[in-house]
Image 1 (spheres, rainbow, N blue to C red):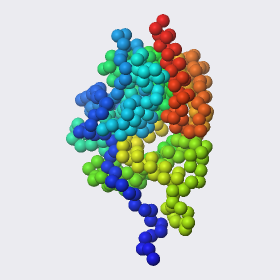
Image 2: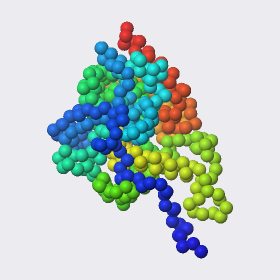
Image 3: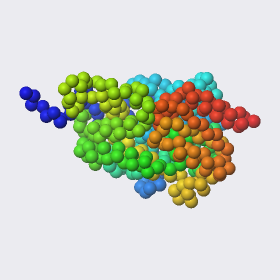
Image 4: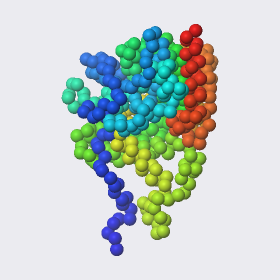
Length: 402
């Protein structure tokens, strides 16, 4: 008779997961560039608190022209980073998240455009975030890192644009959390944005999104090894990876659609269901385990909390008299794209965006992406996205050239 408790989940195999999977000083730089955009108690956050110094990691493709009129800013989603194009490599654990859209002859043609992507404030791939060293203590910020808003993120991107010599972006483009940033750019800096595209995003986080987000954050906070956010001195295997992995599993479920999972997995199993055991897995469970561990090895639990909360706080109408008044500030050509199977950022929200921006007087192109992949369609449906984005940006380029 086995002494194993049948309710005990088997131990995960493989090498231990580091306390934080984020990039840190001393790691290979890969394709990152760095800029210190402010220092000496220079940045007051929207929700309170001050950061002494802000460093941003970013990547660029193509060349800025003499008039600085061909620059495109890409804004990444929750667990993305500045590596929007190119392969994985030492110091860069993933390939570019929009690699099929960026490069010569692609939608964002690097023979024509200067494309920039910035790891956001609060992130963990080279920009200032919870794992960064606090200049005033010499230790990681950890639990002392302040709450960040999407507006804070955009303000730091504007500081970087100044240093790059970009006064006005030809276009600001993003999906999901990136779409929140593109919206805020168009509302906060209407004179600095010639066009804007938001994909699978919203003018304000919905109750459904906030509910899912809080559930994921609680998964991390309820991991005893999270230690209130101060875990950076923990040995590999002793950080809050279980909480982060669970948060990722939860998110991965609603990032996709029922049809996507049904087509891919059905009821296929990993472990034979001969004598039923509690932890014998279906293939969907193995898939969620894989994505949980993959994120824990390349991301930071505190950054997940910070950026996830920033998404919940997103509301372009806050302090501006409501959504309609805020979106009326947008005067530039706008692309709003929805994914028809998205059950997280539902098409209703993009229709609302289209209608409110149109009522404010800006020209809006509305496109529906057909996909079985749900919210993740904006990271998958490249055959549709290439002509959609390519035509939109090319038309803006032609308009500005004349």
